[in-house]
Amino acid sequence: MKWVEKVIEVVRARGWKALDTLDRYRPEAPLFRPLSPDVLASLTLPHGAPLPPSLRSWLGFDAGFLAHWGWFELEPTFRWTPRSLQEIARAEYDGEPSPEMEAQVTPEPDDPEASGPREVAWSQSFAVPSMAHAFLLPGGSDTRRVYVLTSAPDAAGDYPVLYTDIDDQPLLAVLYPGLDLYLAETAGLLKPEGVDFNTVREDRRFRARFRHHERVALAGRREVEWPAEVLAPPRAEVADVINPFTGIPVQVFSLAREDWTQLLTQLHPPSARTALKGASEANLARIEARWGWPLPPALRRFLAGVDGLRLGRYHFLESAELLAEVPQRALATRAAGQLPPPEGPRLFWAESKADDVLAYLEVQDGEVICFVADEGLVREEPCLETLEALVERARVQD
Image 1 (cartoon, rainbow, N blue to C red):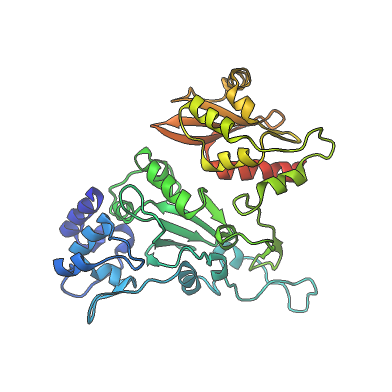
Image 2 (tube, helix red, strand yellow):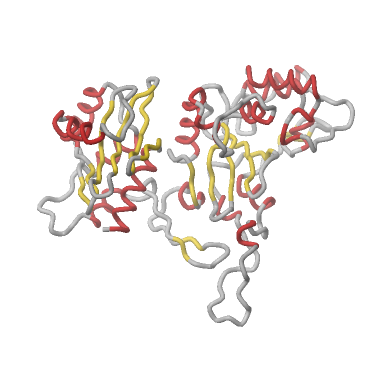
């Protein structure tokens, strides 16, 4: 609650102008409208869970602002008014082209190759069944900030503020791991380095909270393009989605939704001497015991379905190579010139000598993190996202 309490102190002292994105809010008197202790004590969230400490503290200070943005009604009695993520996208986006697309020339009606709708329906791309309870927050242009009640709050008891984007294609990502940090940054209490608007994620104080929400809300990704296709329950077949502006089909590839073994068996060279098989549970347990921490779920599931795979330039190490010191030492030697010194145990699991790519796990602050070294540039990526990117490269290039 400390961030919300700090924000409350700032707003009490300076009024609503203290909050960067909230300065257009001009409430009628009284300036602040706290919920009574009796009402607060009786409240649960729309999906039945307890109020997060951040939201409880804020409503004890003021309920008028969030009521203004459609979170609930205060009269005659308190009543939640959530919308689904798709309903919010429909209200905010449908029929509105992104700034980049507005500048493009619309094909003439008699052009036989003209395609794509004249009005853009983005909301269908945000039809994620698990995001049925959501609330709009101010901020953004073609992006929107949306507080979403997911199936599991983070360690602070809070839920994520996601951002939706239609700049080039529909996109969904975690912008803040809770209402507390959304309010704190709008009040200028967070000073993240960098110029990107979502650099709060790079602050190590909040890293575990971000990763929790990415696992729960985004299937382990940092961001999701075409979220309705990627995050919807798996189907037997996944049809191509249509880009709303161009009318051109876009193939959505997601290992989270596909049968990995079947997909990768199709890519396995017919000339290969041995058929693909998964790692045994005993070997997976030995890897985790050897390294002292559990494998990320995505990598564990990958190894259980496909133990070792060579696709053109890419070599996904098999469980025996993850256990053996010789291949691990060889990869560590190769990486020594381009990777920073490890902060904790390190486990290499994929490579491409042709592209100078290495994928590895590292333990930092007691947490397993996936990294990719790509031609000397090192970036942190969720394990599932790394797997998808490497397999997709192999599919396209090889």
